[in-house]
Length: 261
Image 1 (tube, helix red, strand yellow):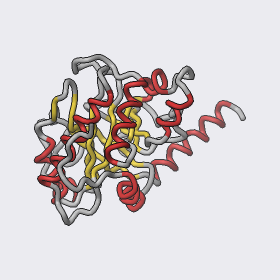
Image 2 (cartoon, rainbow, N blue to C red):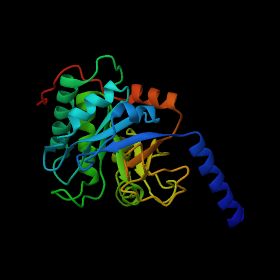
Image 3 (cartoon, one colour):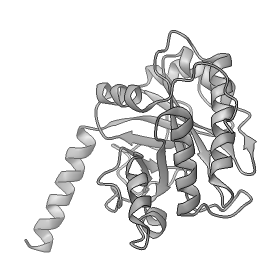
């Protein structure tokens, strides 16, 4: 196959992918000062929000609880992520699960049957204390979340960091097996992701953040309603399959949790 023909094939594959994917997930954190009202976001086509819940060192996002409650009143699917650092992964997982479980029990909409999608953000740490999370610490976090909730969290990272840290061929086979039990949320603001090892494919693709996006704005917008330069993510399927994914992978806390010994 010629390089020119191979390039055309990749373009067609990317177009086919985006044509059958749902550009309807927004990630938020305490750094996002302004948000549109959540009912307007839902009417604009937004389907889900994944919000920062906890971050180093054992802090929590003060905007999480209110936004969870308002988003679920608007009928949006909800997710929570923890930003990992280079400390004990098990302790980080307990902090995350305790916080998310308590906030869910105190404020979620009982009419919303879907639970909260759990995510470990394991990227290069440039703005929180504690350094970068390594693979062993990520594995301890993942296993602890699974032990306490019965579900495996997603793992978020940008493609370059993913390739360097989690795609390293020196990783043990047992660690790779554990990682593959998670679903992948990958960030690439320049082109459709290509390197996802040790995963076979990505489930979520964050294609823009802080207004950075080198993809065609007609199909990859960086704004949403009155919000500018937001973090937008594509789900690898249509709206119905995204709801099924949430139902299959989310955690449904029944009450406020206390860490198990």
